Figure 1 (tube, rainbow, N blue to C red):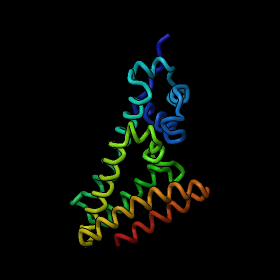
Figure 2 (figure 1 turned 60 degrees about the vertical axis):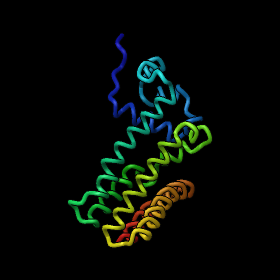
Figure 3 (figure 1 turned 90 degrees about the vertical axis):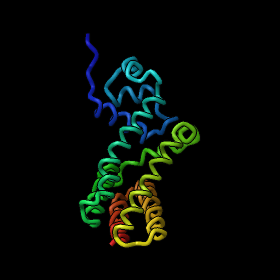
Length: 185
């Protein structure tokens, strides 16, 4: 019997789901196989480097999506700053399923996760800060104020994901995104 064919997006979304929920250390190969619809052998065939290679592929997949749907949107000089911000915030809301999903960075922020993926996590956070700094400058904030606002924006997004999940009040995430929009008005 031929192995089941799984599209790249479906594969990445399944792996992402498990890694968000269980982190790197908690995700078993069985969990990852079940979430993707593949057998363990098929996963190893696609990812000979095992769970670490799978996680690197997920980080790349998320980074590409965020680059196209958040960073490129925030820094697009062809669009007015307010329109860019609103679209980027809508995309952030979609990325985190209205605050129901945790950030892959947080899920990988355990000791072994940071050792293995710290560079990608740091680079992703720096890109968030850079893109929101650029937006701040475009709405006429001075550079120092813009950088502080960008760092606070990242803290607000990450914190809101944790607090809204912990309190089981996803509306807190939406309120935080509205507060971010106000910050850049």
